[in-house]
Image (cartoon, rainbow, N blue to C red; front, top):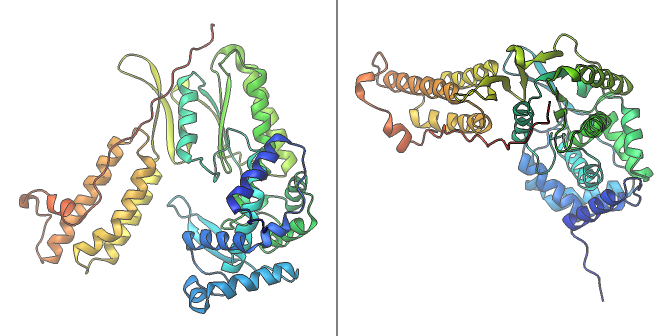
Length: 436
């Protein structure tokens, strides 16, 4: 009787269960699973779903499929089994950062290297997922930026109004690869896996993890896990019943810590910041002092997290509540992007313009619809309608905006311009505050 091969998902589930049950267990015999065709097949599907630009070799998905996916994956598998696989250098490209003049450097691996990284991620991710903490949300399965935002809003609703807003300077570029590999080795006792991972890291340089690499999100989360554990200990040791006096949320390198506002917890604010700085120093990561600060929401101050501006305001019933809206620079960035599309398509029919800008609007609005974004959405909708009117009038070689021509109902109903600006604000669960 021939035993059926275990599926990738079943394997990942078994690895996760073992890692969760035994936090000290070091896994071995993993390399053979990375080399399996079913693992490489799944990794290729993931890479193709994400699409993306070609790497330094210029090979595209279309080119691969023209020559055949089967021989492409077989060659990768043969190289891995023969230990002759060597990752190509990453192709560097710059993209605008937060819609401003600053840029972020992305390292784009070749597709063959994305497949190998994807296979490695499929096997390693469940091990480290078992060790990651509840306050970490960045690039993890079944976790979203919206959950992180809601966690912060809930903490503010509970009276945690003193905020440690930390910015890590060039985090992805400053990760010490030797320290990172040591962290991986605490859970992985497989020399071939460690050698493969070291080659992947060195392909992007002597320091850092490549932004754009498939395996990078898992590794960047692993690097900061000790910071999360320290904050979880702070929550546990200061807890009173169901209420905690410290809360935090981290999305990759974006971290905020919220501390209870009661004066007797002044020491806690200082202690948490001191311990945080100690952990960051151990990692060799530098805090950007210019952007890091202590925020007092009770004094009317605000802070930014994941594209939202957070503050505290009184409701109509006189109850303090969190208030979070899209940051102005995020609104400016999407307007700039839309304006560029209108400029490029100024000689095109309005149908083509709508086809291009609708996905941009849908993605931006879907991200920010969880906050108090109504006024911002009204601005965006009115701005888009004005540009559409102007575009139509120019196409007819007529001046003005055509305000007397009535509504743009036909644009929304017949041409399909995005028009779903509803707010989906999740309710905050109410928890009793401790007696003071």
